Image (cartoon, rainbow over all chains, first blue to last red; front, side, top):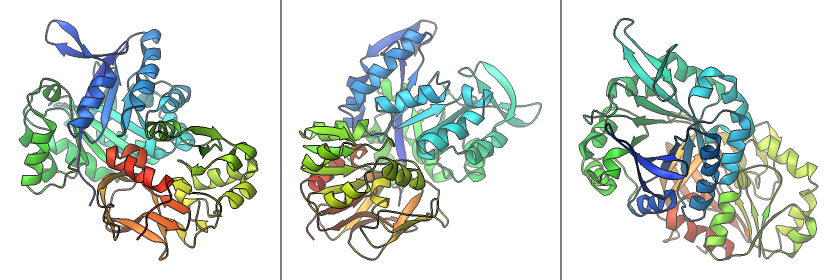
Length: 254
Length: 192
């Protein structure tokens, strides 16, 4: 049996891990390689680095971050944020990323998914989508640019399309649940997982360790991702895993 | 010295990192003379079986690999393990044929790719940890199997015949235990 994965997500800006603080902007919380090693020791099954740099120079620093981290981190590492082209993907994989996650660029140019999947293999192409419920149209829609721009693409249509184009994994963030810390969006995540055969990483809404066990007991998704609750040490990865194991969810124990 | 066979495919940065972390000297090369001088060989690979075989042929590596496979630890990882077998459904092409068996798409009532941490089952006591898999095709063989993992049916995880070793999962991405398994493979493998 494959184990359910617990994945901390780290935001990286200009080569440094940052954390958003409400109304106060960003605070630097450390070097990516140090935080990656810490999460590895704490039992993370995988890491996601999201590059939120706004400039070319900032994005270029990400390559150094990956190179440095990959020398000491021997669990899978996914990189997302600002990836535009096959050349970008090639550089990230060459630096030591195991997977890349595409979002806005894939929505703008779906052919990028096919091209990248054929060139590098489906296993390293993760498609991230930010989905939000539209009360009027009674459906979920994809958003781009970190959730700022709405599109007319229905989330459930999009996931089927990206799977057929060669995506190997989905990272689904529920914008309605993100930041609420009241649990994952089981309804959306179940519908998405039922629409595809590729694995789904659930994101948005985790507040307690019980939110993860509930996610795995009530949906068939493969992994749960969270950022702030792990960074703030509100919840530890071990607590999440212990709770899951207690409730019969298979976990990798380190 | 370890030589990682460079045939222009796959992400070998992390295999290199893992071997260096274990203390080995590593070269990534397609140079026949360098390959012959190496003490240990790693055949890496991600991507498409057909593409990999074509590149191995285009780089003139077929005969040197044939020679190397009988003289020193020869470790195929992920697609590199699948290439060791006779035939693959992926592109419907022949592999290197060093080991008896074929490669077929994973089917059944499971997610494809087989992605994530799965537990090894083996008669070798040290091979009982969770390791990281990511693959859509799997090997079918009833010979030389050292370890499997359960994914509806069994997935062949490690094979060994003399000095030829195949590892389907990513030991370089399977934490400390994965590094130990990689080290053991490079040192000659898994006695049952």
